[in-house]
Length: 432
Image (cartoon, rainbow, N blue to C red; front, side, top):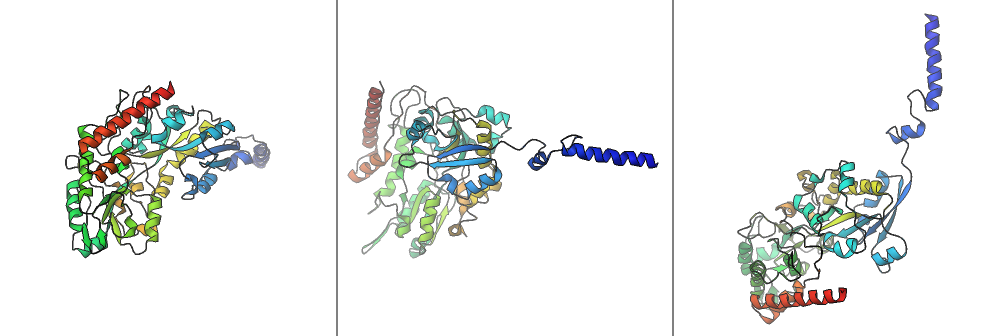
């Protein structure tokens, strides 16, 4: 018995020595620290280019990434003078990860040859694309002609109708409510559009009429999907123009008045951004709330088209797997909950994440923040053929000129059509 016990002790001592050397099935100190049984990741540097604002400076994102990926050094470059795409490429600083608006994908990511299809990486890392709201994911794909997954949706504009409670109280008019149609909102606008002496109270304004047209609830594209021509002089855009025009035909209404914090605008529809919420917080006298965006009576369950921003991995990146892990984390429930709580528009379909909307934004305390997620997004427009010419469509000037000159809708759309077709022809000539 004593001999057997001695052998066991001796075996234990030998095994202990082997463990320290990496044998006997044990883990080395470094392997144990990694928690995976594998050597710790090799330190790398990833260049993160934010083409739209300073995204990693929001919500403590950069600190979270550093804690989550301690082996990665993040070199963050924000778009500013001397830091555009051509500047970075010329300096040999092609980014690994790019934060960019989907609507600008063709003119930036693709134009500079940085596009990389993430489909294989998503399969390799068992990344579930079903986490995203379907139409948000579609917009990320359909923003390129091939319908490829060049970027994962990070954030998306969330729209609402904000209203000034004091103006409604002043005239004894019921507040707006979730689920209203454009006709119902117009009826309210008529009741609170008042002039008292030198004071004008405007019933309604669209924060940006161009966004109303571009991200419209009818899923219309102003450019033809198969031919190099405009597609604005249509029954669909006529419906959009006529619907919005009537609000600015009310007495003394002004298309340029979108200063909700000024206290003289009863209702405004627009994207509720973190910047706008900061303005609301500074206007301490403002007594406001929000409801869902108005909808057309024949499309009662349809919000605006998504206007999303995505995280792209560059074709030239030497660390695509690690870059994908970073992008995957930024689009995870864990991080998207932080984004939603801080007032950002989550791209996820998760009700759990959406229910956290604005929880960490003081100015949203007691507000109807769920209105931001009341309706699903309208389906995105189909992608245009790859050989077609892309030009900007200036809805802002077109709509403003129509209101200021009291032009009829048919004339306004015909003029816009001519303007867009001319721009297409000029752009094609320059390209040739």
